[in-house]
Image 1 (cartoon, rainbow, N blue to C red):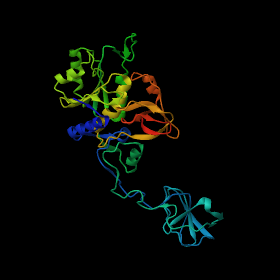
Image 2: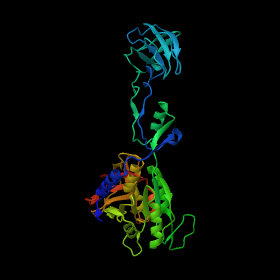
Image 3: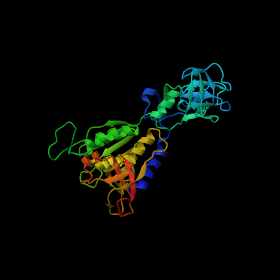
Length: 395
């Protein structure tokens, strides 16, 4: 086991999970249930899109080479209908947005640009193709319009419905066991004594797992006893992934690593140079990957988001999990001791400016709940001034 940089830790997670997991199982999901799932097949266009030349504006369909004054309106066509005749020189058809262009017309003049007197119109000379979306401009029949491996957002669902798909083959959501550890933990609905805390970690992880594409399964809290912890870890290893919170530091009663070792675990690292969340274990036991996340709530949330989330996404069928760290300008100076990659609560405001939030440490859920982003610092830099760019990760 070893201490690794954040970059090396993430690369290790991606490499090991990708190499060991293979192709996840698939299932058929109705379109209504497919949102946020990962697509396990290519979705192709069933016809040309648009299937005919189509007007992009309300106006008049004309022949661009014809006259522009005294043009006679010979009919109308709206979306959902078709004009049976043809447009000749000196003729026009009133047309609505989305309607098919009549034969003989190669331009649409916007209604705002037309002067009308009875059935006669005049307009500025149009160019060929003006305000017309030609047949197959968006996709040709057989083109892949939503590729395999794509997480299905609302636009992908719309595209699937457009090409006539009522259901889709998607990757099965991986089961993720969540095991909080510690004698000090009580359930969320219980009244804790002054020396106890409620089990927020299991519920934050459940929300994060769901958002990443997994199915969370909450186990009972493991008490700081070897036999109880081992029993629950063995249950958790029956899932596709096991997430543990707490019990991975160097304290007398931090027994998670001991139990995992006794179960034949292979450890890839047990400490990462990040803040919060340095004591972080990643490995595999009985064919199941596990993460031993730190027990402090913000450490648990951060380490899942920047490392464990990638494992859930790979198991859910994504081929390239991403960590979208962008750049933002600081509203105030920021100082740090070099050596760690830091993910600290911040607010990203209008204009892309980032304000670090004061925090009392890795147990400060109040501040993290107020944040909408993380400030992401580079490990080898000591200071930034107001106006400098720094990394930002949306929450």
